[in-house]
Image (cartoon, rainbow, N blue to C red):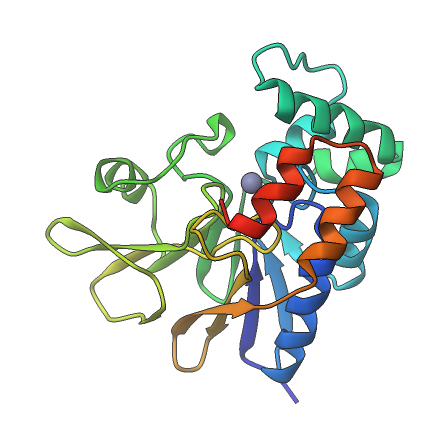
Length: 244
Ligand code: ZN
């Protein structure tokens, strides 16, 4: 039986507890295929487990900036915030050469069911620009040729809709209408930053052409304990409980 429901995961960031909770929630929604808008690793303490799960699921994945830096040990981290740099170095040590190869070879842009996916923006995806406002979304839209495109990177679920102008709206649910373009941030599985600490991901039903944001409770205390046990900065554990 072919299934038309896709689960779009993004910014998992090595948070196994959040990923596990999202996957069991997706099972309840009868998901047939998983896709990922990037940043499987970085920030949290279980990169190998998360990466191997994504591969086992046959999850179509695009490259995120953390995937890029964690898979390229030769790139200097001197421009990085010290906290981010320490996690990237730690993650590089956890990943095998083969796992780094896998991340390094991820594409910047992919398509599934007529939907484009990118980590940051189609406006120079390898530069990792952030799309928070309508001006940035407008620059992105000049490159978007499918009705809908999904992304991550900011960890804040949001919907940009282009009609005559670009309109920004909170993202909960949207049905793709003819003649419009949509750029949708699917939320972050492993490090939400919209002040809601629950894991976020998005369902897409290709039959009804509807995207719907999901929020899932998970064992934040366990994810925090893993971060502390790994000796990663405590701020990374604290922020999970705050959703920022
Ligand atoms: Zn991220």
